[in-house]
Amino acid sequence: MNDISLIDLKQLRVFKALLKERNVTRAAAQMGLTQQAVSAQLSKLRDTFQDHLFLRSAQGIIPTPLAEQLEPRVNAVFESLAALAPPDRFDPAEVQTTFAISATDYAVAVILPRLMAKVRAQAPGLKLIIRDFESDRLYPLLTSGDLDLALTFPAFVPNNCQTKWLFSEHHICVTRSDSPLQNRQLSIGDIADLPQIIVSPTRANLIGSADDWFASKGYSRNIVMSVPSFSAAPACIASTDCIAFLPSRILPNPLVRPILLDDSPPCFDVIAAWHPRSSRDPLHKWILSLLQQAFPAQESTKL
Image (cartoon, rainbow, N blue to C red; front, side, top):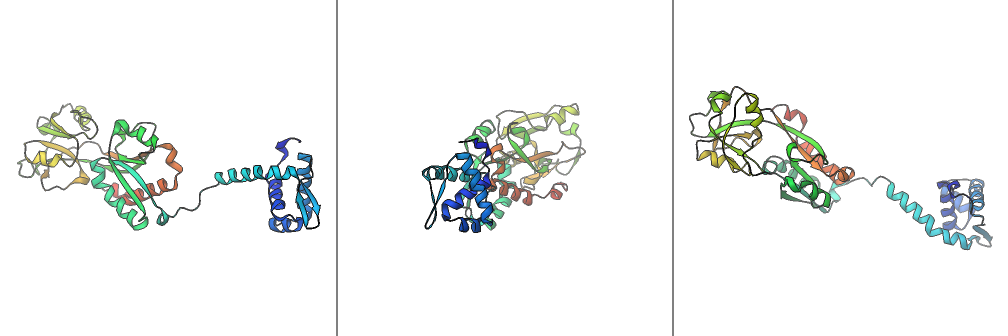
C-alpha cells in the first residue's frame, strides 16, 4: 500500500457509497457526482491500496476481500468524525436528568426561586439537587461530577474553576426591630464598638467580609458571634443588642431594621462556578443562560 496520507475523505465517501450500492451509477447519484468523478476517486484508491477493491459482475460491482476488510475500518473513521461534530440542537423540554447545585442559604433564598421557576416552565423533566455549600470540597466535587454548579461569592471559589458574574450585592447594617438605633444616621465610628454578628457560611471563625472596610477607616470590629447561615442571623439580632451587616436581597425581615450609615462597605459579586470541562455542555450552558435571564444586568445597577 502507498502512503495512507494520500487518502482524503472524498475518496472514503466514494468507497462507502460503492460498498452500499454495489453499482457505480447509483453510487454517483447518491453522492451527487458524475460517474466519471466516482471512477476517478476509485482509481486513486486502487493506486493507494494496490488492489482493485471492486470487480465488475453481472449485477454491478462486488468488493474484493481487501475491500471487505477495509469496510469496518472506514466506518469507524466516519463514526469518529461524527463524534467531533457539534451536538444536536438542545431542547430543554426533552431533558430527563438531574443537575446538582451547591449553594449557600443566601443563594437558596435569593437565586434558586427564580431559577426553579424558569426550569419548571421550560424543562419539567429536569430535577435540581441542591447541596450545602462546602468551599473546601468544591473543586473535588465538581471534578468528580457529584456537583455541576456552585452559587456563591468569589472568595469561596478556587482559581481553577470557571466563573460567571450574576449580579452585584451590597450590605445593609441592621439592628433589632425595637432598637433605638433603627433608622438613625450613624457613622462607622458610632458602630465600630457595638457588638456585631457575622455570617461565615464556610469557615468557623470570627473573620467577617467587612473587616477590611473597617480597617481602611481606622477601626476594628467588635465581633461577638459567628453563625453559619444568613437565615440564622436575624433571630440572633432580634434577641440581643447586636448589629450585623446583611446582604440587601434577603431584606426586609420583620425581625430587624436598618441603621442608616453615612458610608457603606464596598459592593460584592455573586457568581456561578463550575469545572472547566462543563463549559461546552448544552445543559450547563442553558442553566447559565437562565441565571443570566433571571438577574438582568440593569437590575443589579439599581442596588
